[in-house]
Length: 184
Image (cartoon, rainbow, N blue to C red; front, side, top):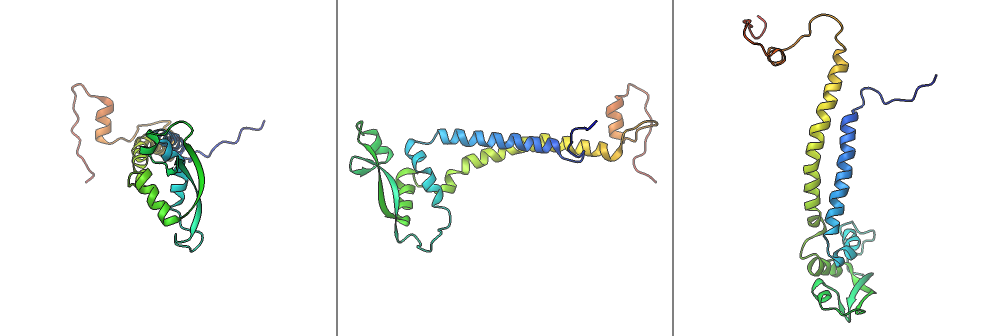
C-alpha cells in the first residue's frame, strides 16, 4: 500500500498557513484601498505606477511619449472638471507629452500631491499590522511542535519541569515543599 507523500515533520506548517492567511488579508486590504480611489485615480494608477520604475531608455523624461489622457470637452479631466461634465463630454485621447511633465501633472492634478509610494503607505502599514497577529499565532505553534519533536514523547517516569511550570500545573492547595532555585 502506497501512502500519500507528506510534508516533513520539521516543516513550519502553522507559520506557512498564517503567512498564506496574511497574503489573502493583504490582497483584501489592497482591494479595499483600490475601491476607495476615485475613477480618475483608478484610470491613471497603472501609468502612475510605471512612473516610479526606472526608465528603460536613457531619455530622462525629456522626449515626448504617448499617453492616454481623459478629457472633459477640450480640457484634461480632473476631479473638479468631472463634477460639471455633461453626459458624452468625457473622452480618452492619445497625447504626446514628456514623462517628467505628465508625472508632475498626475501628482498635482489627480493624486493631490502624493507620490506613488506615498499612496501605498496606508495599505502597507495595514498589511504590516495584519502580519503581526498572524506571526503571533503561527510561530508559537511551530515552536511547540519543534519542542515536542526534539524532546520526544514521555513514556515513563517524571516529566522535568521548572518550578514555575510545576506550580502552575499542580495548583497546590496547602502542603508546601521548600525548593531551592539553581544547582549548588
